[in-house]
Image (cartoon, rainbow, N blue to C red):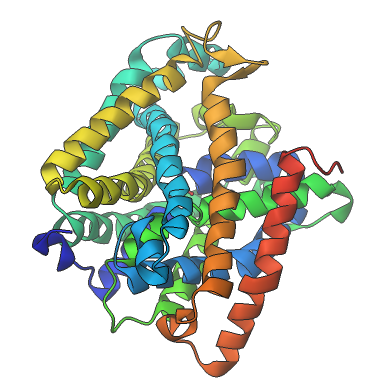
Length: 443
Ligand code: PHE
């Protein structure tokens, strides 16, 4: 690691903002609503919260501790702590995973920018066929143009480094997002008939839950907290020794949960008021929400705000995802930051193009077994790489690394609880998810 990188650290507040910026993203606003809609509404939301508490928080703390303890990248931190290259090789899985997550995350982030522009210019409301609009967009080359914009902005932030780039960007964007979010939530809740959406989202009906809901809730907790992708290990390496990791974990957990809550309070009332089913799948916010915005007063304005909010939330996450391979490559190959950022962003952009095409022009070739390449990468990364890497971290911090408790710096009481979660609860639950997706267990 070069001398410059070694001393490039987050300030305490800057770190909290950046970690929240990483957690809060498309997961909260694009994935969370349709997953909640599909897997049981309020009852699912409750399960999601339980997963955040039992698995999300302990694993987040473990990742931060590993990063700060090893002061390397998502792979080398494990090697540096344990002196064993095998752990580093396992950690590399998350580096590869983050590269591929970013390849399609950049594509979806690009869609949100496109929709923000369509909304502000009023073009979004010149049609009533939102399914057609979305599929025409998918069947053009425009998504690739927007994906390029996302990669460029992300690279511009990363090229400036940790405190000048990542921290500065997040310190500016996150407070702005909170204001936008509150504004949109107040507005959505004031719509006539909003309460039906609120009760779908917040009044649990446990009969709607299936065993699959629990597994999806856990996967969603991982994705939403940016776990299992090396992101928090990488960010952890830039945290100062004086910062309390326990307090940071709690702030990020609460911030992320509140954000998901508010996002739900915007999306469910809005779609219920306009009589749309919340189980639309990935197109939910691009198909259902524009229809809703088009029917409300000031729809262009609120719709535009919503998509801008989404785009910025996505870019703060994109920054954290791309930093994982950037940190890895610069340490591994000894490249300086600008060279690394440009190379990695370019490669990641190229890797994302087939994903983007697989949902449109290239859909007939870029598919396997009825699933597009895009869906495959999402599926493999979110449901396999994330939990496996999460498992690696829990086992590493729970069993292999004796200094974990000291690095985490909790009180004796909390250390006991944390280690119990890391050693038994989290690995067991994660294993269940994996076996389920591997087809070993059927429920
Ligand atoms: N947490 C981000 C979101 O909710 C996505 C993400 C996943 C970021 C994994 C980093 C690592 O959108």
